[in-house]
Length: 327
Ligand code: FE
Ligand code: FE
Image 1: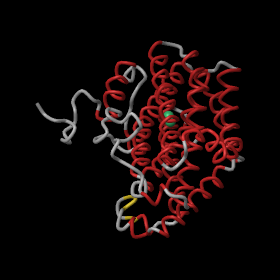
Image 2: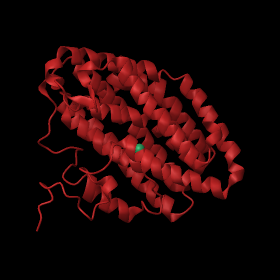
Image 3: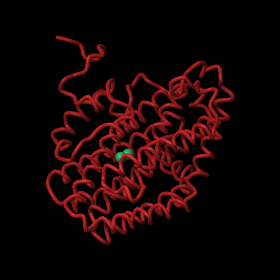
Image 4: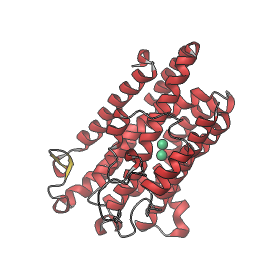
């Protein structure tokens, strides 16, 4: 019998795209894989996620993986990471609740099962992001007031307008495919690359947070690829809906232009830079991506790279969905 906890051989029972040690990065996976709702049903999810990606990682990381001491104590690294986690925890909470409408509106069993699993994934993301704040010095009894203090302004400025668009489409118009597009193109498609950046830039200062991001990124490959395939199949069967979907994308993009999301990202990245400058020795020769040491990167380079990933992912997805007019 082989000990799979110490070896690196893939476990044949776990789909490789969900295997902790063998899954591609979020951006690579979302750009190269094709998965459908019918493939990613409840049986797939039970094998791939609770028994696969998350086996032994209820909190999103192994128990012996901990944030570095410089990130646990008050300072710019702690501020940058707690602000980010608080914001992400609220975003995932809102996504979970919106997904309740997707489950209710799903036109068939395959999409109903898939969106049920995505609902669980997003509730889990919210929980692990929130929970990790406890490892960064937040007292349990202050958790929710701290999340509010750290992220209520960003929530109101960035997340509430996006949530309102989603609720208008899902709750008021009961438009399932509109909801799929809002989620896949306008919310997750835009935010996912920031999550990958987060995994890479926190790896040294908080390997537990990086692992939490890694697990959420593995889930996100599934959300983006299946969401795209649901939209593609729907538009092939109902070409008459294309005009409406294109208008929705245009509306969503206009909305994004007026959201202070870049300001928020730059504020957190500036804090991160301060911490990086103070602890260059810890980062050493760690490469954030091949050939580029983290210590040599700038705020603009990190934010710009995530933005490029986002653009190239969007182009690929829109083409695949048959929405090339939106590129
Ligand atoms: Fe998520
Ligand atoms: Fe997601």
